[in-house]
Length: 250
Image (cartoon, rainbow, N blue to C red; front, top):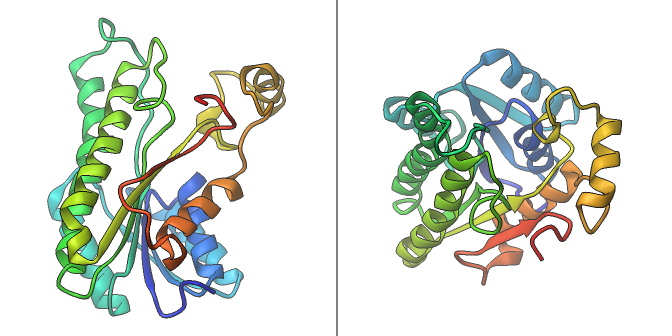
């Protein structure tokens, strides 16, 4: 119960890693607020948290819009009495190589993955540094700062930027009592790790030879790392980008 009496905000909380993290934080005593662009999946996350005995609410917000992000943080603080932990997980996967991307596709990746992370941190930090500090964990990727792949240039560039932004922000704000770190997952058991038309069984067969560990990562393996970085147990960890990819970039 590492997060009793703490308020945790999870962006991109309507599915996948965000939903699993919300459930994990709540299971350890946190009051959780989940945010995303669509109410229905967020409401389902809240229902899952509450069915497990936890406390949660949701706020519809687009992290690419500063007015939305400012209102999101204000709403969470007003509704729950504070903000102690933020997991900035919202993001999108955009395919296409440099010469094949449209400006709209490039902008979509930059806006969601990089600008959204920056705006979220900007407003979370503004509250935390005047209220005793806190912890922030951002979702980067093993594709970016750690590895590159042809055909996904916008995704790689923006996730590498999230890693660099995380480290620089950590240096800027550790003296404010705010610890900032990142996780960089590889293939995880979510729809994002499926190739077009691929089934989970097909993915398992592909990853047996593609990853040194021979399998896809579980949601629990990612969320346990997120919770560790957000907890006092990692109190000496600042500006770290924790790679969770089964040895793919070892």
